[in-house]
Length: 472
Ligand code: ADP
Ligand code: ASP
Ligand code: MG
Image (cartoon, rainbow, N blue to C red; front, side, top):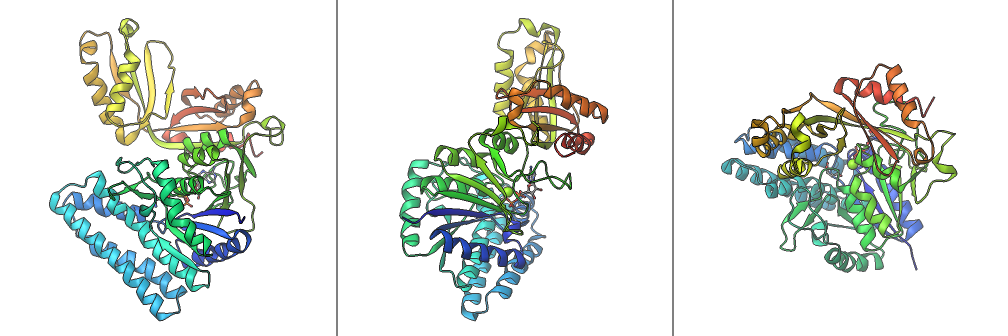
């Protein structure tokens, strides 16, 4: 029985001619080694943002930038098709398909402008165009390079609920459809090349799985087939000790445990979408993160349990992450102790604004509740809290509901922290020595991470200081 590999290529990995050349070679090699290969692609880098920006402008009645957007999209995709598809018929056919999709974007944006509103469903229809463009391009260039491949939209087999912009897959329906669509192709030696990020409701409306969701797509497809391995091809050498954009000498972690990667992804390491982990772990599938621009590098492997108590070179802290653009919201008042169900009502109010809370912390006294929310939702959260506690505020049981300026959540991660006393002390000393002021603290119940909230201006300082605990 041949083994099955699902490979996902991120935005930069299909974002230029050079990247595509590398991706083609990677797919060719994988086909030789594995036999059964499924490729999942993101939109070319920058495309999803561009699409969402045009929909947002259209919703305010602005369509003057549409011709420029059309031109950019054509240029990006056509340049790659021109460079990589010598066969004129295939090239022109591919470009015609790409052009038709770009025209559909223009129609959608014009319709949004007329309505003066972009519903979540319309936003998904627009956002989906990026992957639907890139899948045609990648399908054509891989075929042209002599590897038998077929481009298919994942809307044909990834079935989701109608929670637009953050849809949840129906695993049962997806399993049935994915096997039915993909297996016959692989049986014939064809590489299915499909869209990440998108799915469809049972009625066929296009949905998306949330920003950065192509990683999740690969995990879903890998889990339902099931595949033996899922490889995430990106633009860095795997999961690193921190974001290499902040610290240049960040190092690749050759191995990372389930719980560590879950914390890292949740607390801002963009290299892997947090939802990717569960399907592969549940299905017992291998996961590897590797670099399209350095394919011989082994990258990072996901492992079940850490060796040697989770220590790497004697260090328990393995990685540092940051989530920016958060606000700390505090509800405080001396009368709060007597008010029943404050926390339940507070988080109920937050939930009613559809905001998720990345961190809850015990502030200096028990007479307050403090938590982080994304900056863009902070105002609606404050309004909801003021409404729900209106009578307590009037009675002065609650003195005030307030928020900070922008802050960042900095998280240190490592399974070894569970068995090692004094890590928190080490972390806070390091921050103190570097004059990074900690506004709040939270420790995950799994004891695999400690999070600290710092002012936005201290983000890089804090990450760099904590990274020195790992790479000296
Ligand atoms: P893709 O388009 O391939 O999905 P992303 O931009 O979503 O790529 O994620 C890769 C980026 O994640 C890297 O370029 C890097 O800047 C960032 N990143 C943040 N934290 C980490 C980390 N701990 N390890 C590796 N990369 C990280
Ligand atoms: N293209 C989508 C995004 O930019 C999905 C992804 O790249 O994973 O969010
Ligand atoms: Mg990504």
